Image (cartoon, rainbow, N blue to C red):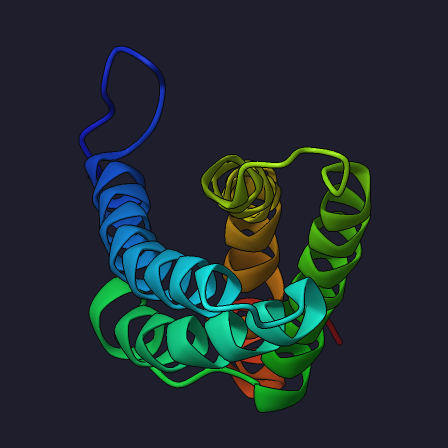
Length: 155
């Protein structure tokens, strides 16, 4: 029997959430650092987003696959989810970059555009968890034979 916490979540679900959060923190730090450095040194926001996405995608996939869910997932849904996230971040950072152009301080521009990159992934954090949990790393359904074996046969 699974132990249920006061919030109604099993300890296993809380552990899964904690591992996903830790994996996301590692990927976010790597990705955010890559974005801020690229943007600071004059890379266009969209290019900085792509570089940052690649920098964070590798640890994110490895940690989620091995540490969080402990199994390999379906690669196509994973790829669609992370590329969709990257496109969303590219749009947001490009729009933010356009909006901050009147600001003279390059440091403030970097902070604001980097902040929009971080905010995008903060919002996508929960969406990605649900999609990874339900689509990418979902436990396979029991085989049809085992379901038939549990069903009584009537003649």
